[in-house]
Image: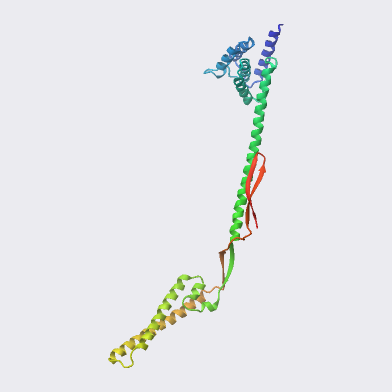
Length: 299
């Protein structure tokens, strides 16, 4: 049997075996369409083989749809492109094959060493890209995890800073202060509203008593009109008694209320400055494929 016929027979046998192993066997029309394109390649009509398979595979109405035959046809089209010096177009066909089926192996009898070497180069390129992508994905996940930890540490540092800025103080109250009039006891008990009320009313009452007293004292001892002087004196004395009585009542009531509402001690939260020795320092942590930035605090 001539060598050419032997090669064709062996390749046909490989195609039939590949098609049989496929999940869905190609139709006879697809096999015939593939053989017609392959014959163009074997006869050295590479330009025609490229045009033929371009329409058969990627045309408006593809005639070759079986996955196994599609891979074989793209391999022949890529080899024909290489014969025509169109390396980029050949690489595109090889890449499409390998992205669809990374385990694809071209026929070492049908294709020359140069085509096989170029196909292996594309395989190695895709495998390297896949490895780099996998490493990049792993690095991205690691960086994301470190960033999440950094965010948690940031929240914790802010919480510690807030804690360091505040202090809880015990405020002790005095019964002596609670016994002082003019709302002092109410202010000590933390009731400024009542404190203002007692301070204002007691102040007004005491002021009225004081003014009426000095007014009474300023009346002449030998008035021209005795009746008018007596009336003014009585009015001043009445106002003085009323205002003084009101002051005493308000003062006693305010002191009594302060003692009734008296609480020996209470707690207050106060803000204080951070220690002067506090220092926040940036931290850079190298990781695979990059780095993570953070900060640290020294006390």
